[in-house]
Structure formats: structure tokens, C-alpha cells
Length: 196
Image (tube, rainbow, N blue to C red; front, side, top):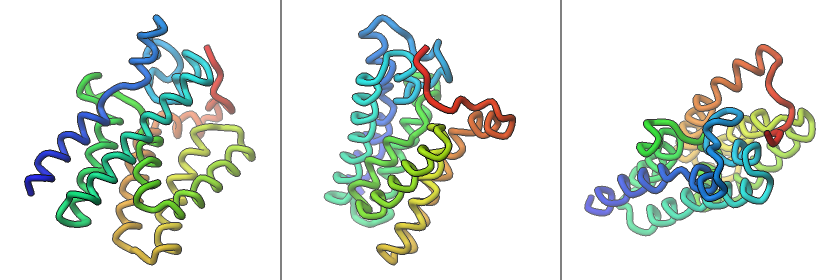
């Protein structure tokens, strides 16, 4: 219980660090004033270009991977691991440092999945990449990947509890994309992430 009392809030605070905004401030650009206004990798690409967006994605994924690893190492149960990972993704999406704004949780979810279900993540990424090549739309690719993840977890690991947790993470990511979903329905979602 002591581990959870430390790691759950630590995961939230780590997830809440707005990596994209940090990179933007270093470059003299506020990504919140560009594109979607989010501080994740896609909007960092619009604001700063390719390599900063790669760095933001890697760091945000690292947050999820680190907290998933610490959860597996120190949490007293699988539910405890889930709580730590969920707190980290919630921090990414609803950052206390940005008045409950943030990224969309895709990279952080992916980082956690890399530690928890690496084979399932591989399948989900393949599905997401294939979807991107079909539709050339980042949001569709991301939503497809997180949608495929719980199915892959169940099929590969025969882990219904893990699949349900992956489904919960996917639902959070889908919720964070609700504005994208509205644009997709209206046919106005950009086909690629263009730098402003």
C-alpha cells in the first residue's frame, strides 16, 4: 500500500509534465496556440517540426513505460499496476500544470503497453500504421491502434483482465479525441499533421 500511495501520485505528476510545451518554450513557440492546442507529439509536429515531435513522443512513451515497470516491480497486485498506469495516462490527458488540459494519451498508453503487453502492442502498432497508410490521418491511426490493443491482449495473452484494462485506456484515448471524432464525422479532419 505504501508503494501505491507513492507511485500513483508520482505517475500522475510525471504524466502531467507537458513535454510538448517544454520543447515549445525552449524554441520560443507555444503549441497551445497552434493547431489543436494540445501538447502531444502530433501538435508538436505542427508547431516545431519532425524531430521535436519524435522527442516528445519518445519522452511521453517513456513516462508510461517507466511507471508500468515500477508498478510491476513494486505494486502489491495487478490492480495496483493498473492504478499506477491509469494515473500516468490521466496526468498526460488532464495535466494539473495546464488546468486539466494536456495531450491525448496515445504515446503514454503505448509506452505502458510496451512493458505490459509487448507482443500485443506490436500487433496494435502494425494495425495503426496500416490504417494510417490507408487514410493518411493521424487520429484515425491512433484510434485504430488503441482499439486493436485490447483484442490483441486477449488473443495473445489470454488475459481478460488485462484486455479490460487496455479497453479502459483505449476508451480514455478515444474520449480525448472527441473533437477529432466530430471533425471526422464532418469530413474536416486533416489527412496529415501539417506543420503550421
